[in-house]
Image (cartoon, rainbow, N blue to C red):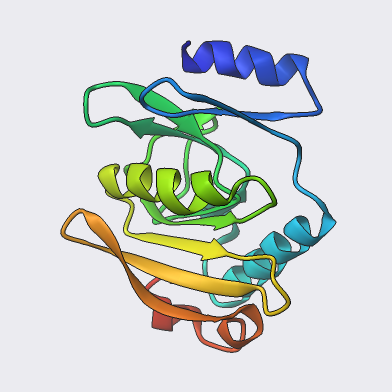
Length: 171
């Protein structure tokens, strides 16, 4: 299956979100819920108010994820921050990505916390944050070190939103 095949599937189905790993494993998920969208929006507003240009931030945009064995996957992080504006496209390259954020939904725990963590690290993405939809909306901030992510901090979303974007190397 190619990314073009995946794009065609998404165009024909408004009720699901499709992703494929660099190894060719297809994932099908329902669209995110309201709480999920509110968390993503709060993070986007915080980033924009913190000085990240609006054209450097996007929700639910596809990324081309290169595999270790030459395959190419397509992932749709919940939030992406780039170092510069990107050309329009369905599956964008990871070259300028500073941060990807995944908001864990029921049923996506393994993919978000294990599979994508490994894929994003292999792709060289500098930061990977995971937000749980628990009562604190816990954010685990991971930074790439020696080709793997190391947890830099785990904190409630409310605390994070009271920090400076500069403190996290994103401005």
